[in-house]
Image (cartoon, rainbow, N blue to C red; front, side, top):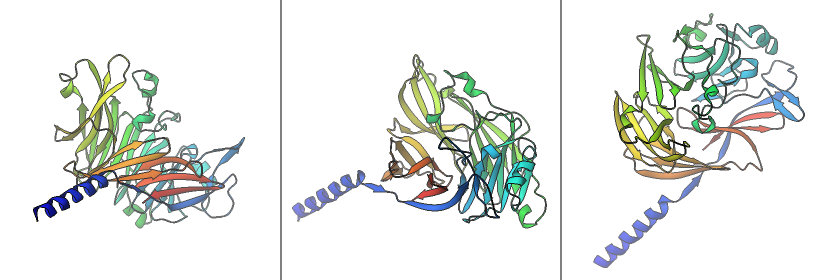
Length: 371
């Protein structure tokens, strides 16, 4: 009997060990697609593009997706199309006073809602509201660059990348649309701020993580009920004594619905800024807790229950490791992009932890969800 139990234990241990390295491939499923046309004709919504020397211009920027709602930015046209459900026609098109006449010419059959003067940047979707970033000047080329840390040049080496145009964040209640009246936008911010690394829209507050430098973040919390804005500074001073001869940077920072911040601290060589190792910290009520020491993968997402994704982005695939709130491994997922068969423009994770890509085909732009 004892031998049998020992054998069963060894078999279960072996299967558990094998399961630790088992990888589940995610499948691409088309969420929505739009026609690409150089000349708009008819009443249907299409994406206006320009083709020069076989290159396509004026394509959408990374969309914002929450549930079945989509905000689709077309930055060259200074507009965002709003889809409250998965359908080919937007319920409204957002632009600013700067571009309203041009946008109405492009989409004469679509409702156009006008924000204050400026250029639209990031956006965010809440259950009962929308948030838009509006730059106060027209030159937003640097502000519209990819935001992920791995795509951003180190500001220590290239200080010009830190230049940011002044902007404001505007809050809009969806109830205004149901009342069928003019949309009223409430300004959340009044002063010039660093560029938002991420916007988070939750049920009772709006959060913005703003990067002042690689060593310091601002966390802005706008309470929807009290309509007050609070500012918290996240620094790395608490680690100075432990790493006196190193450079410390925040990377891949997230804000949860419980108002907890979770992010990576990259420890780098002071001479050439090469990464040595990293640690993942949790910040709640100004208290710092080290969650993981020297993870091999990068932090991709954190859920309200404090479970999270770690990921490794390779040339043609993304490996995703899933952990629970106690840092126990659950499983591996993987996305194979198959670039030789498809033209994937980008990859992104939304606030719900869902994985998406946008894909280009002849005369068509599609948003793909990986499941």
